[in-house]
Image 1: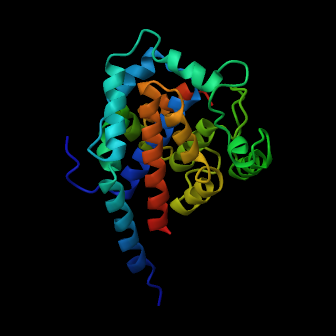
Image 2: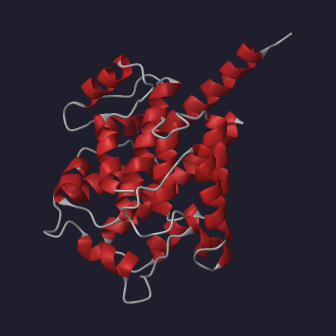
Image 3: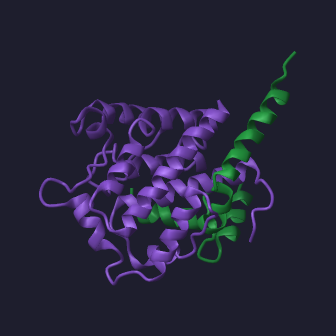
Length: 202
Length: 67
């Protein structure tokens, strides 16, 4: 299938939401066989985003028996101190976990009617949580319903843009194997796209 | 007086063109190609008129994220 036509706005929102959900899932925990199977369908063009998707699909087609869990754990769980990467807004912005950026996020969540399900222990300023919230804002999964591009931009600019690319850069620099390097490339490409696209919408 | 329609259209087109060029359009097929029935599920939820536009595939990602 070729993207011969420029899709309409609603289609882009759906794809953007899907990309947020995808990256959120990739960062939220070790993968499982079902998810890795989904990933085999990913495809893209020759853009940075597309190449990262193609790379992930290629890796997913011949996954290790543990579905890359061996790569996730040392990066995000680590030995005692919480891994090489601490993907929390507070940590990246102030150097302390559970700091002001988390309070700001909780503030916005209240306004938007977003409640954590309580199924994870991580605070809500975890990168995967925030990317997942973008998915919900675009699709209208939360009480406030779908929000328009300006409100998406506001949330993104306040809570994600100031630090997300840094996390992906760190993930790329970390002692990652191929899989999470490709995840980092996907994240970097998509954050760059979103930042630029929001500017065009302003 | 209000030129809203006129001023919105080029902006939206510019954004769409950028997103296309950046590879987002091409990513759509793979990102949204659900486990078979994503499109059907989407049509179904649109019919219900709830504005609830998640596709089955996207929801699968979400549910697996467990947040």
